[in-house]
Image 1 (cartoon, rainbow, N blue to C red):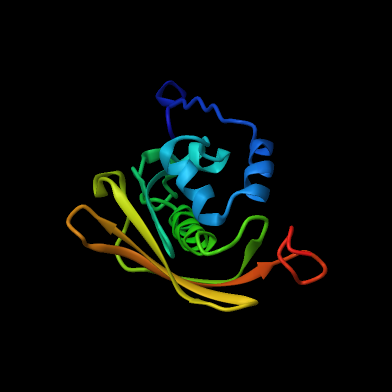
Image 2 (tube, rainbow, N blue to C red):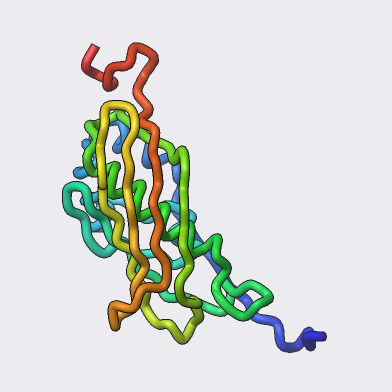
Amino acid sequence: MADSSDSRRRTLRWSDPTQFVEPIRKLSGLEFMRAFLRGDLPPPPFMELLGIRIASVEPGSVSFEFEPAEFMYSPLGNVHGGIVTVLLDTAMGCSFHTTLPAGVGYTTLELKVNFVRPVTAASGTLRAEGHVVHAGSRVATTDARLTDRQHRMHAHATSTLLILRNDSGKSPGTE
């Protein structure tokens, strides 16, 4: 059993997530993601929690980086697969977001992750690169890879995304 004197602490601060409502409504997905990259918008709370940083934004492609840490470990001694999944899902969703006009959203319909190498603090900085595979009028598909600095793959994923428009089926502001 762990000694109570061996406890570790972590302090967390984050910005109010409601500040994203207006930019999401007014900026294209590409403009919105580039605002994060430039630091014009702060990271959302979950990114602060996990230490995820946006690394690059291009049309149809977004990359994030993070440092695996002990507080992310499962009892098996490696980073919990859910945290790896969050990183990959974020890269895939944000890559698709870069293709959307202002006010149009999306949600993940399906997600498949393959874990091919353990992730631990010793893995060093990891990079999740998401790419759009197909952007349809209602559904999109994306993929992502999680690699280390030596370009070794730790996980890869695919997702299916549903495009969310207003009730008329049109993008907001085009009625």
